[in-house]
Length: 118
Image (tube, rainbow, N blue to C red; front, side, top):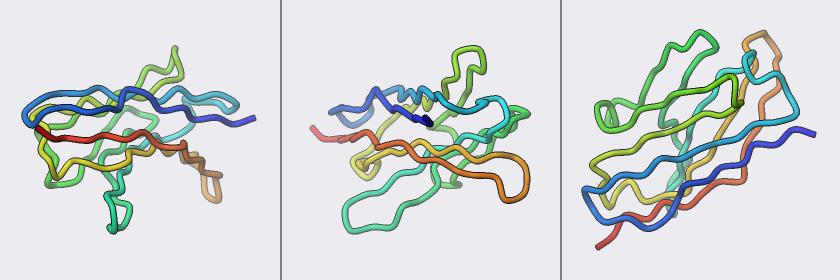
């Protein structure tokens, strides 16, 4: 059974930091690119960051320099370090897995709420 379980969300003041974690199980983690998406109220879901099986990363342009994605294949976990948080970062953050081969399956976590407010 495939599971992606996010954790680490919560309430933080502007300028603060959070680290999200996504623990994966039920598939061969190292064969999957891992991503973080987010969805704010009344907005579409958007890509935050992606890390390939090779470890290469890419980010939404607006988030470069503040967010860092990383993965630990030994722990089947992907992380998102978020620094200098702003109120506009408030959203539900979702973990996503996608196999590298064509027609590969993809999976979603249930999401974790991040609220940036004073």
